[in-house]
Length: 234
Image (spheres, rainbow, N blue to C red):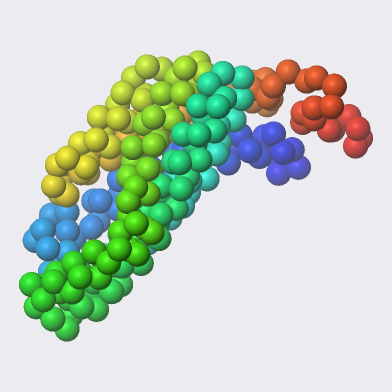
């Protein structure tokens, strides 16, 4: 598999589509803030080990989801190509920025251990409301991942690779996670999203090498495909 670029990309993409959203759902389960005080400084201070674990899981979930998005673009090489390039690029940017924002968690842990919850929240609000933070890291980038992925999945459906329920379920799940306060409902929402996105990963893993390669554009003079490259380098 590792000697064949097509199989490697197929297996890597399929695996990431399963692992990345699953990490996000599990992170919500282990997050102290999901089940306890809605003030993160309180939950993080009471359970520092779980606080660090959930932050690391969210961080890697978002980074791996950015990579998994590139795998989804492969199945859109023949249909909805421009749509996929635009939505895919914005989705990748969104997930990378989501990952970057998690660096605020260690700051919140420290502040929560040395200040009251009220003072901690006041300091965080002053930090996070700085224009450079808001427009450089949060808006609109913060929402491009969670909103962009369901939109991208619409393109995957149009390309014929996903059933209609996949973008619908993902859209409902991520939409609910943003509209409902963070808590147990978030676990249910992100578990549903993991089912939707993970189903595409399972489909990729079940594909043959020939099926994966069939998504490349039809070879024309001057255009390189995996098979044509292999023939010229054999």
